[in-house]
Length: 556
Image (cartoon, rainbow, N blue to C red; front, side, top):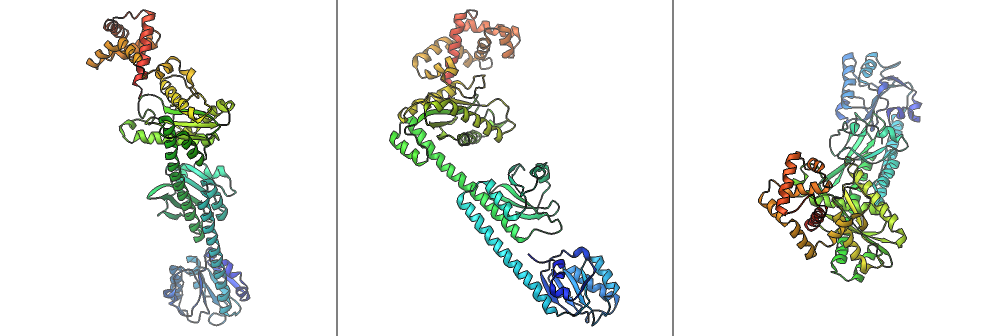
């Protein structure tokens, strides 16, 4: 905002005095905050730093020690420089001792070899300062207006950074607390060089305070967050290593950070409310708790048109039985892990719907699964839409957790498409049943449909049928009772390993992690408990069906 000593020396009134730099060229880029005229040696006590001192020298000390002290006090207080008009005290030049002291302290020392009214110099410099302040004020007003508009528009982070970098003329980076880049704008510079080794470089940027400049790295940094929850940092690279960024840029980066934080809150709160409405409507379709016409009307108000659309129910859930099967070691010990994991999955499903450019109601449908009712223009778009959604979901989950194994840890299941909202419940319920039946399927299908789950799917559809439950008890009841009385043995697992390995005893023993003699002995005991010949194909088929039915009945 302030002119430098170099710029002041180039002003017309200053050039009229035929200035000559005697010492302190290293300080020519110091800002001049004010111009002060002084003819007394103890002027330093009246200065606050940043002043360019004008003098004729008539009041300066006559001895060398006094001159050194005078220069030292100016340098200590942070004066921008000293201008001495020749002709009154010093005729041909300033004393060498004064020049040497100024050079040593890096204080610009200038001789005016022609007389010039000091008032013209002060007027010119102060005019520059006032103009710069007005320019800074206008820039600040533009910053406030620009970011107010961005906040009202709910601009995405990339757009906020683009406009911030445009106003600043400097590269900007938004990172999370793990030093991962969320968005950036190189402001015309090489993006690869800007982001090369970012995490390592970012951890070395440690400014003091929420908004501060780190001179060692050249980055101006501010914390991004709201409601006491910080979630990232916004960084602006200042290219002038010798000076701190102007106040305008501090205001800019703080306003940009506020806009980012506000945008995140608005999106999160709006999405939370929208998701609640989505859940209400999906639950109403499944439970028949609201008239179908009301559901259609409220969905249309959300921008999801369900009338005269081809509707497909989709359910997404995690594989396996554990509530935190892919949340990492120890995650199941955290009572919050399950709900948090379900929220993450619901967010991923919503993002996948948007990425695939589909229209749908999406929400958690129970404690383990997230449902979506896709509204498609016609039946011909069904397969393409399901493939696009499932692919987008995998990409979203991979981006959120790059360390997750390549094999999908979720099941995407779709029910049969229907032509009216009144039939949507059938598609959603079928999708949930397919998802439950496919949880233990070893294949990694993009999307499961009813033909993919075969017998397991049929049994899951019939899991509430009393005759199926009676069949399970008749086939496996004695073994279940034995396991309940002998919890250490768990012979049901041994039987499962034997049947899943196609009655191959060696493979079954390996799958059960038992030696072959121990495995054979357990099979013999199972045969006695069930009064069954485990070498009989028909008997083993019946037992295998009973096991699949038991899994379907036990599914939460």
